[in-house]
Image 1 (cartoon, rainbow, N blue to C red):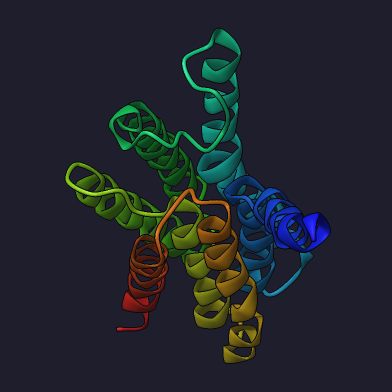
Image 2: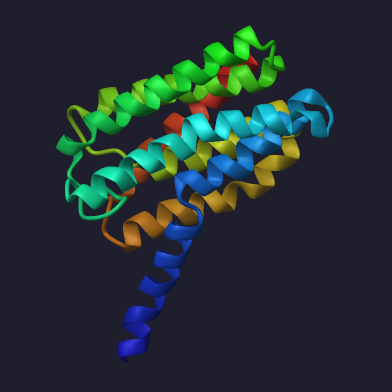
Length: 194
């Protein structure tokens, strides 16, 4: 009976750890870079995007966590999230500027702008209500790959659904908070089609 109660939690923990924003952005934006450049030469631009959108914010969270500011990477208290959003916005902004100056492929820059706009949306909503950043990132990255590379990437959307499920199963978010995050991520990425 105990195994039945902990089994889903163990799976949810694995999903939320493996598909955390840092990892999703690293894999997804590298893929966007390759697709945008039309060859492996886009890896550098994709990695720059991943560093700015995912690795820098993760490093900041880890730094604050080690100082004792937060208990873990999840920063469950939404009132403590403002500095994280500001770091993300600044890091993506600097990365985008480097991309403009370096003549990066258009679609990598578009992905960065979409992530910046998504972060503004997350910050705005977070001021009044907790929204799932993990769900937003997972949904956005799958959608960006579908927009930039091929609609077939939408077949990977169950990974975004798995992230939403894991966040609810671990009681970090409600269903509404994960659905709102996923919808915001998909909307900001899809907007670039138009």
